[in-house]
Length: 305
Ligand SMILES: C[S@@+](CC[C@H](N)C(=O)[O-])C[C@H]1O[C@@H](n2cnc3c(N)ncnc32)[C@H](O)[C@@H]1O
Image (cartoon, rainbow, N blue to C red; front, side, top):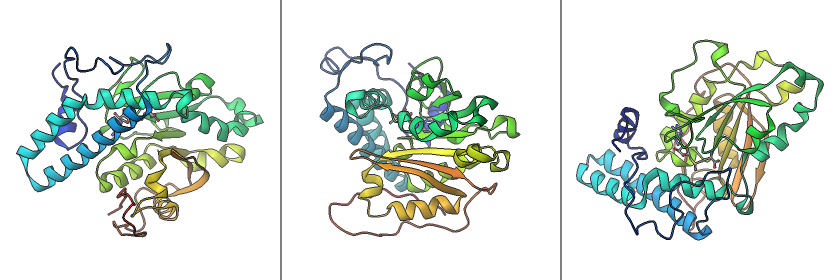
């Protein structure tokens, strides 16, 4: 299958490949072949296998960004071939879907539903459904979708279902007016997929441009919306050389967000950030600076330049 135009552009930008690899007999024999539909019982990849696929692909994406920065096109081609051989984004998404299984921690949107529950049982809710933009959607059947409380627009670089638009959030046209904006954006396990720390910062800033004005809301609604639901692998915040919760909070506050809820599990960190102003952009830069040392730390960073 030839990569679509959008995909080619994405590859050129040093981001994950979306072209699917022709399935060779024997190569995926022991892995769940194809994508597991969420409505039926998903085929199982061992927990260790899913973790290893995700880690390997993240590492390759990082190396690819470095090779692009160095202008080493031979290296870029070699890394792309390695990514392709591992199954590329399709294998990554398959592994991620396995991670959403109930017995592996479940779908992260269930945490969001717990947090915003008080709003849905308040008097104000009679006003109707909220508009959600789900970036990096792998399924149309997560807990949020099943709640029926949201009108959800779903996008992903590599759509897995007809209800998911194949689109790069960074290339999504900016809304022309309030009607084209959203009350909440879900960015669950997407930011860590972006290989470059500067691009991660840009992605966070960009979310503010798709959210409605906080002036639209009052009462209980204003306690939760407009907001960003952010989920990351826990070590990105708990064990990074360059990021901890204090630093993340400072970054978010500098782009106009305030933390409303947070939760840390062994695997993941979850946050609900409420947009507090109409500002776009950040009020001070955040460089890649070591804030904790130690040989067992990881290098996850978010910067605002
Ligand atoms: C690990 S999956 C996360 C899936 C799901 N949201 C979850 O919480 O399990 C990351 C997804 O983010 C998507 N993604 C990454 N960057 C994106 C971008 N700029 N625009 C749209 N989707 C993106 C990838 O294609 C991938 O399917």
